[in-house]
Length: 125
Image (cartoon, rainbow, N blue to C red):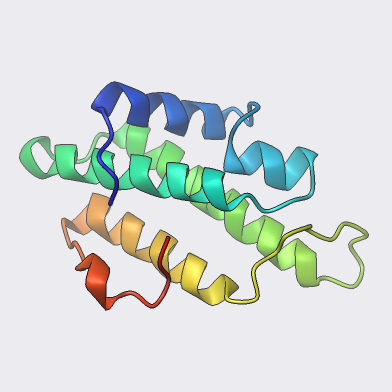
């Protein structure tokens, strides 16, 4: 995980939650493209928030926002494969399941305090 200030993690989460520019959600929804940079930014923000939650416990508002963004990312990926949906994501990764795995583990880190060693992932930066 890349180190990130807690304030920056909250800012990135909020930007995604509100579908603002310079976020993975904005790129997926408004630009129909998958940004690896914004993916890692969101992932790192979740992991930073998860580290913070270890000592304090999960915050319900933060948990709701993380879950919402996670759901939106998954929906956009599903829409990419839906023949009834006209949008196709540019730069969509072939190894999309590895990205989903990272998101899943980010949620596990936040909600359960379970952190997977970076070396065990096949998806590298």
